[in-house]
Length: 405
Image (cartoon, rainbow, N blue to C red; front, side):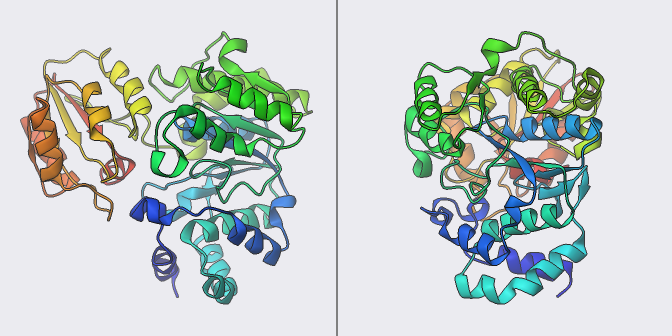
C-alpha cells in the first residue's frame, strides 16, 4: 500500500467518532492497553504533558509545544482532528510524521490491528506514541481526543495534566451536566501528578479538587494565579484564557526542572503557527472583504468567537455555516447574529447535517439565508456578494473550516 491507500484503510476501520458520532465511542481503553503492551509500551519511553478540556485544548497544546521548542527541546505533539492531511496529528518540533513511517507502522502491525479490531483512533494513538519513542523526543504534548477517563491517550503518566475548561459538548457520551463531564475529564489526573485547571467554574471546581485530593495531586487554577497576558500570533481575545493556562503550566514545568526562559515563552507564543502548523483559530484568509474562519463548534466556543466578532467593524456580515448532525442547534442559534446573511452548507463528512435541514431550523429562528451544495460554493457566493468593507465569517464545524483552508 502507498501512503494514501494506507490512510484510506485506516479510515475504513471501525467507526471513527469524527465521521460516525456516538456509535464510535467505546466504554473502556482495553484495546489501547493491549496495543501498548504489543508495542512494548512506547508511552513509557518519553515524558509528556496531557491536555484535556471542552474548548481551548488544541490551542493550549500548540502554544505549549511552541514554547518548549523555543526552549530547545525536541517536542512531540499529538492532536486531533486534522484539517487537511492525517499527518498533521503527529508532529515533532513542527514537522509532521513521514509518510514512510505511517505506511511501515500499519503494514508491520496489520495483523494485530485486524485480529483485535482496533479503531482508527486507537491505531493513531499507538502510532504517535511509537513514533515519539523511536524518535527520542524530550517531551510530548498529548491532546485528549474525547473526554479523558476513557480516551485512548489516557495510558500515559505525564509530567503535568492540564484541563482547560468544561462545557456541555458530546453529552451523549460524557454526560448531560457540567459535573458529569468534568468527572470524565478529571480522569486524566494521575497519582502525585500536578494538574492545571484553566478556568474556575462554580459547577466543576469541587469535582477537580476532590479528584486531585484522591490522587494526592497538587491542583492549580490558572485564572486565579496568572494576571499577565502576553502577546501571541493566535488572535482573538478568547485566547487570553488559554494563554493563562499555558503560563501556569510553564511555571510548573520550570519547578520540575525544565529550562524555559522568558525569551522562549515570549517567542514561542508569538510563533505558534510557524512552529506547530496550527490553523483555523480566528484565522484570517483574506482582506477587503475580511474573511475569518474558526473551528469553534459548540456553545462555549461559539460564545467566545461571537464576542470577538462583535468587536469587528464592517458594513454587512456574511456567515458561511455548516454543522454535524448531532449538534444541538437550539443551544447555538441564540448565540448567532440575526443581522447577517447566511450561506448554509453541509460539511463533506458522513455526520454532516443536510443544508436544507439547517436552513429550515435557522429560518424558524429568524436567521435568513440560502443553501449551497458545498462549503466551497457557499464561500464563493459570499465572496461574490460581499463588498470590500463587509465581513465574512466561516465556521460551525471543524470540517467546514477544513474544506476552505
